[in-house]
Amino acid sequence: MATAAHATPRKGFMYYLTTVNHKDIGRMYMMSSLIFFFLAGCMALVIRAELAEPGYQFVDGAFFNQMTAMHATFMIFFAIIPGLIGFGNYFVPIMIGSPDMAFPRLNNWSFWIMPFSAMLMLGSLFVPGGSDAAGWTVYPPLTSAAFSPGAGMDMWILAVHLAGASSILGAINFIVTILNMRAPGMSLFKMPLFPWAMLITAWLQLVATPVLAGAVTMLLCDRNFGTAFFNPAGGGDPVLFQHIFWFYSHPAVYIMILPVFGMVSDIISTHSRKPPFGYHSMVWALVAIAVLGQMVWAHHMYSVGMSIPAQMGFMIMTMFIAVPTGIKVFNWMATMWGGSIAFTTAMKFAIGFVILFTIGGLSGVVLASAPVDYMMQDTYYVVAHIHYVFVTGSYFGIMAAIYHWFPKMSGRLLSERIGRWHFWLSFISVNITFFPMHFLGMMGMPRRIADYNPVYADLNMLCSVGAFIFGTTQLLLVINILYSRKYGKKAGANPWGGITLEWTNTSSPPHEHNFEKLPVWNHDEAYPVELYAKTKPTV
Amino acid sequence: MQPTAAQQRKNLRLALALGAVALAFAGSIIAYPFLRSSPVAPAPFTQTGE
Image (cartoon, rainbow over all chains, first blue to last red; front, top):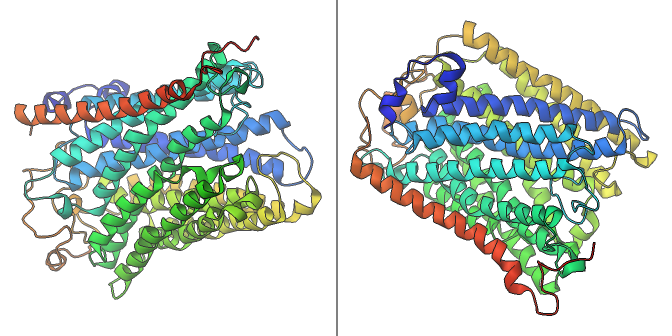
C-alpha cells in the first residue's frame, strides 16, 4: 500500500499534502513545530515586554491574559509535542529497521489535522471577545459561558479536540509500528532508547489524550448546551474538571519530556563513543516514570481542599518520580564517564539539558511537598519550575537532536561555529530569564498578572532582558539551517560514528524506503560494543 | 518493501484494539459524572434556571 503511493510524481504543495513517506511527514512536523516555536516565542516576548516594568506598558490586562494562555497552548500542542513527534516519525522506523510507519496514510492524516487545529486556535484571538483568557488550564468557572462568553473559548476547545485526534492517531501508529514492524532479530530489549521512549510516550498519549477530549467536551456542553458537569448551581463540580484536566495534563508533561530522555540517551552515547550506561535500568526508568506520572495528577491542585491522606498519597508518589529520574541523570553521567567525548554542539546541548533539567526536576520535588506548595501555588516559582522542564528540558533536547540528526536528514553538517554561539548564548540567557523567577516566586509574585508590586521590578527587568536575548539567539538556529543546508560540510553516512541503524545502514539523507535491503539485527544487545571498532567519526 | 497481507492484518488488529482503549478512556471519563450524581442533584442535566 505504501509503496505505490511513495512513487507519486506530484510536486510542491500537492506532494506534501499527499506524501505518505514517514521522513517527509517527520520533516513537516519539525518545520511546523519550528514555526510555532517562533510564534509562541513572540507571544512570550509580548508577556516579558509587558512585565519588564510595573504598570501597563504595551497591552491591556485582557490581552495579556490571552497571551499567557496562547503562549502555553501553542508551545505545548503545536511546538513541543509535534517537534518530538517529528523526530519520532523520521527516526523511529529507521532505528528499528522498518521501511515506513505501519499506517502511512494515517500518518499523513495525523499531520494534516494539526495545521487546521492551529489555524482555529490562532483564529480564536481575532473573534469578538478574543480567545481563552483563563490560562491554558481552562478551569471553569472562568471558562464558563458566564465569564468567557465569546466564541473564542469554543474555538479553543474545538482546536484542542483536533490536536488531540491528531495525537491519538499518531500514538496508535507509533505503537503498532514499534511493536509489529521491527527488524528480524530486534526484540524489544535490543531496541535503541529513543524508540523505547517513543513507545512509552505513545502509550501515554493514547490513554491520557482521550481524557482531555472528554473534559473539554463536557466543558463545551456546559457552555453551549445547558449541562452542568462543572456548574455547582446545577449539581456539577468544578473541581472535577481539575481532576480530569490534570489526569491528562500531568502525563502531558511526560509526553513532552520522555522522548527527549530517549534522544539525549542516544546523543550522549554516540558522542561519548560508549553504549548508554545501564540500558535496562534506562528502559525501566522510562516505564516507571510513565506509570508514576499517571498517578500523581492531583499534586497540581493540593489547595482545592483534598483530604490530608489524599494529599500525602499524591505527595509521596510525586517524590517517588525523582528515583527513576535520578537513575537516568546518573546513567547519563556514567555514560560520559571514561568515554571519548566529542564536544559537538549536539553534545553541548545534551549536557546543558542534563544540568539544567536537573534544576527543573529538583524544583519539582520542592513543589511536590504539599505544605510548601500551599505557599508557592500560582507564584513565579511554578513558572520557573515549568520553564526549566520545558525550555532547558524539552527545547534543549530538541536542539541537541537537531544538531545531531540534521546531517542525516540533509546530508550536510550544521555549522559548529554558529552552533557554539547558539548554545552558549542560549545557555546563559535562559538562566538569566528563568533563574530569577525562583526568587520572584519565593517573594510571592503571582503568575498570570500584567501589573505587579514595584518590589519585584528589578528581577522582572532581568528576566525580560534575558528573554529577549534568548529569543533573538534562536534566530541563529534558523541562520545555521539555511546556511548549512546549502554550504555546510558534506556529512557522509555516519559523521559521528554512531552504531544505531540510522547511522550504520542508511545514506545521508536516507533514500525513499530507508534501506537498500531490510536489515536483520544479528546482535545480542541494543548497543553492541563491537560495532564501535567498525564505525569511526568522520568529523 | 510492502508489508505482507498477514502483517497488515496484524497491524490493523492491534490498531483497532488500541483505538478501543482510547475510546474506553474517553467514554469512562464522560460517563463518570453521570454515575456519581445523586437523585437530589442530578448533574449534569439539571437546568440552572438561566
